[in-house]
Length: 366
Image (cartoon, rainbow, N blue to C red):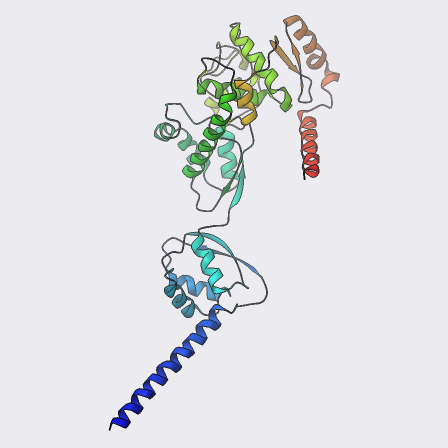
């Protein structure tokens, strides 16, 4: 009797050992094998509310794992079934199961770039945001005018976040919401502003005034090296009590009525009173007219020391600067009234030259 019991126990132990060894072998084979030796990219989305078993079956159907059942067991052993994060992920058919699991729990979703250039207004950024498929322009505009969000981000009341959305390239995923983007843009602005503020030579200026002037400088500048001189002109005019008389403020004032930026300006527009028309109102407009970059902010804070009061375009993005109206009139006749001076010229020439220069400098960089 004892022998038969012992034999039975040994048989059970042997069976358990065999099953364990078999499962261990299968588990080893599963975790150390790939569905394919060929690396084929597959975008997989972990959607909100989707269960792990459903995800595992999806992965098997897409050829990303060999067996959904063993993948689920493996994830349970690793205690990572509940750690998958919502998002779009780039996977490959030659990845190991542990690599798949690592990606899906990382939260590092596929991101697309959203580039905001210097000098764009909230109207233009909102349109670009929708055009590139990231969200709705109406939602963007609603949030940049949300008093509570403005107070939270800036710590002060303003009509909108115009001027405070820092122009840069932002990486957005499918699940990056509009509020998060706007928050990140303002945080980036605050970082850059605080970085350049110690370089300021101004006294008695508020941050809002600096940003307002910087936005005008950004809109008026074609050649980057001219920013400090253009800044000096506006500072000089303000100190003398002269109107700024800058066309971009007219365009922005019209946008408040039209709900969009319209570039064309008529003679009637010059005389039409708006909150932003600096041909009519004295001093700075009530707020920024665009979103300035770092160099425009610095130029507003640290203008060149000049006696210039006027500037006129040379039709290629650069300007002629004058200290008195007589010299300014002469420059206007030469470069604006003279049709031949304008013929065949455009700011695009300067933009192309700047682009070429930037490319050349990048090529020369170590």
